[in-house]
Length: 216
Image (cartoon, rainbow, N blue to C red; front, side, top):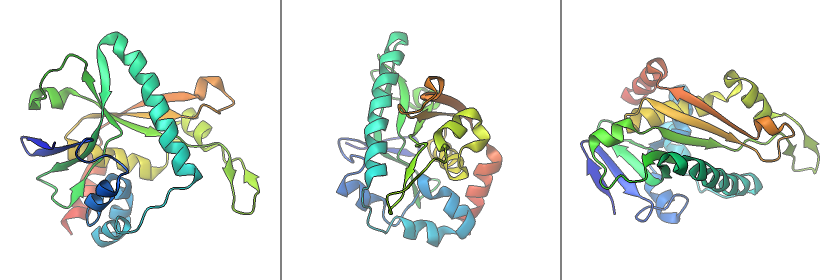
């Protein structure tokens, strides 16, 4: 069931499961976080058209979905010790940005929170999960090693710019000040880099660029 607090509409995963046909249809005609950088570069129409395309899973998307579930299970086991849990939503909408929708990978909440109110919502950090690989398999059967995950773990500056805009778009829609970027690759050769978490703060410069693109 969907519900609203102040000017944010929350679509629950029961009402709008992420990845479902209903969810795909809901996103069509909207600008979403994954298209935030395209919005800034190419404008609203290009970003909206991106969500009108049919989405087909491949080995990389299947891997990403499986690993995202896995790492959130691991994080929940750790968070539970301190009384927190990652909750999921199908999508969020903000009345101030009627053309937009945001589907967070998760939001951290106290386990014992009985009822979500505006003050409780404002305190909660978002979760964004990226499961980059260090090895890319090409259509001709060859492999290359761009070491994308490892490079991102070594330096936040190596995180792709589209991912940075995605998080800032999410914080704009959700009206949050913090998003934890979780990088997860259990196959990483460096055990210290199999899970890396960056606290990403709200960046008004990026958000203003997004708002400017939305206003055109």
